[in-house]
Length: 223
Image (cartoon, rainbow, N blue to C red; front, side, top):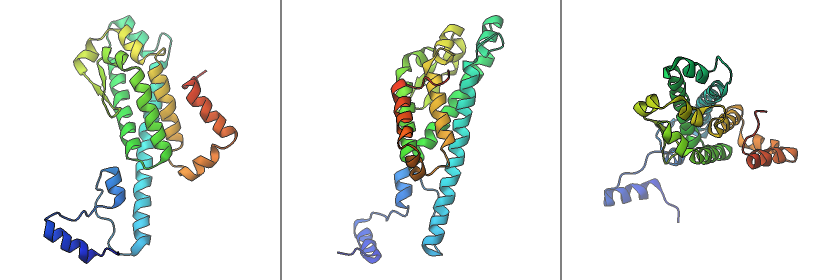
């Protein structure tokens, strides 16, 4: 039986349940970016959705690049590293500032990965969440709590009172957490504007082997 708008309207009036005005895409993404264009037919609707997806891709790329950049700063060794400077001065404010920046960029990346309908971005999200869960105890000791959705909550007082060794265990060069988060974010940023169809094609043959190696070795890619 074909369900018409009039039938839905009568059912809505009879039950007192308002009709859902959001698109299926909005429901899936648990958001309402506003009404889709009412005129112009499928062409304008498709153009609107493409523009919306491109905006999300730009946001994901920017936040994921920030995670990758901050990862490299936190993993830097030597006398001029943020950890070495904190140890020398006894002042961890610059270090905890970097960690807070990292958490902010990380959370934005988690947010944009969650809102994406890309299969690959869903995979990146799962890998980010899985990686963080392995280091939940070290993060918690440093004043950073892992939330159920994979995002991070910074407890400012605990973070600022943590000693350098505790912070280094969670976020330093020897921490698998930042290394892996940086790598996954780097891949998400590099592929943010690439449609799934093209990504799937690039992971055939030797590409598939590279991806499987990435998962098996859990990101030992920095050299």
